[in-house]
Image (cartoon, rainbow, N blue to C red; front, side, top):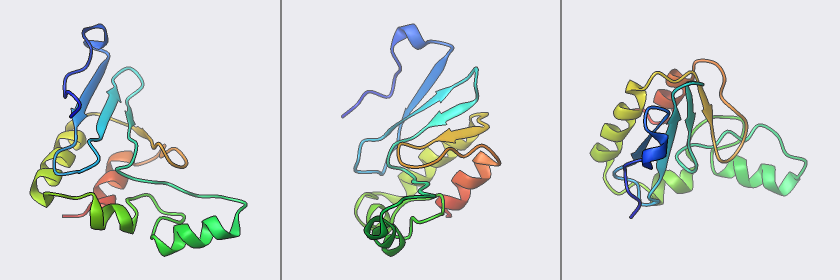
Length: 121
């Protein structure tokens, strides 16, 4: 399991958090200077694709043109909803202005609200 502590060289620049209650061992990064949150599979933001089959897949999984987790992630990756919510609250306590998802487009407006809406209580 990944460590929740950033390398010493990142001190004061990048904070990390291992998301609890999430089977994918996701470590979220927060770069203080740019107020940027970096996530991988916690949320997707697929806004465009040239592939009709990809669009069909994204729509079927509830991740087409919306920021949030896929249906597959919601169903299979959450192991402890309360622990996940506690991790989300920790992330929301950081002063971030944008989100860089591993899959899809950036969130550059109302990023904390977008994250909160993606994983409602």
